[in-house]
Length: 120
Image (cartoon, rainbow, N blue to C red; front, side, top):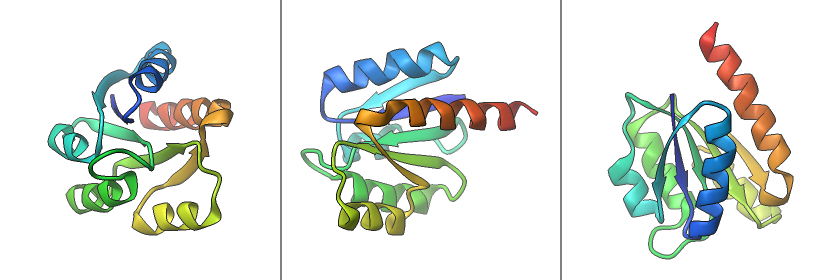
């Protein structure tokens, strides 16, 4: 199973890669929404971890476009912005959940639980 990590901060991408690689996922990376759309493969990408504010295409726009490509991929917005208006916009665009970067344990839990469901 592949996870696409989309964040304009290379250090954050590296950190998230280490976390999800330890869970047994293959990882692809993109630095903005445009490159995420180019790299997204609906046949092999099971999860997308999407930052919300990036240079170029932002995460909300990218989520909207990804949903046109796949209704089944699980998209987690992973962001620093604890703003209800952004959370609502992300969920309305098609994100499955909105997780703050200061609470990555929640992300690990969701990925681990989803991984078990997909194996069964």
